[in-house]
Length: 293
Image 1 (cartoon, rainbow, N blue to C red):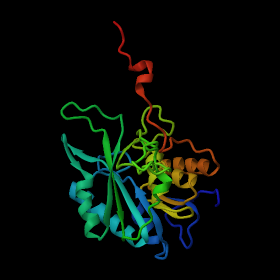
Image 2 (cartoon, rainbow, N blue to C red):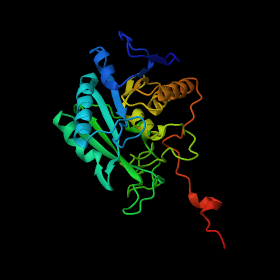
Image 3 (spheres, helix red, strand yellow):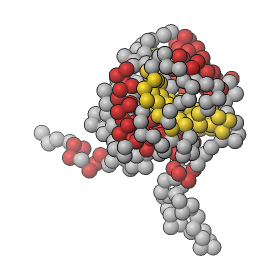
Image 4 (cartoon, rainbow, N blue to C red):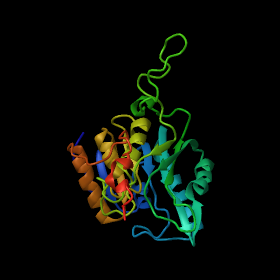
């Protein structure tokens, strides 16, 4: 594969997509320009949560849902019949009330004929400390397919079995020698503080989270699309694992960050925390000891 990441601007006419490309414009504009024959093996993204972050314009909640529905509807014709779409979302919060976005978005996906395969809980250890409710320490990945014939490569993401030496009464090993199927609750640190992937993006997607999905839901040489690519974490995972990638974001600052990160990954210099890395035991740190007064 080529190791060049092309930057596509508003007026670029797309006849044939390069292996790695970033579109500096809202995704609504891009989907009108991509040829109908272009299909993605996997669409994966973490769209804005309508919280008024610097990269989004806050809308009424109903307008936000309609905007998401329009984008999802435009994406479906560009997904292969064996392909998947993964939407990673959190909560919309207003005046202390939370609205879980996965609950509101699921009927939209379902009404468009998509089939929910997993509701994956992404659990992490750091975040805001709430005062009038329990602190949120998880978000959700909704994984949908277009049909019952879809790519799912379990062997590529198996994790070590808890008791690999366990045998049945006939003396045969009871676990798969390649490891077990990961459960649908994933402990992967979020990108905050001194995380090795940290950039200036305020809500960065960890590469490890998307890496597991790219490995299991696409094949080498397949094309991955992130319609809200931000700092390019999905592109990094795609480049590391020999998938093609197209990303869109309207912010030139984030496009620049994404381009540099993906180029580094293509050159074998990706800085990221793999999905298979064990969670650090905080008790090993001296900071876990309460100071003696």
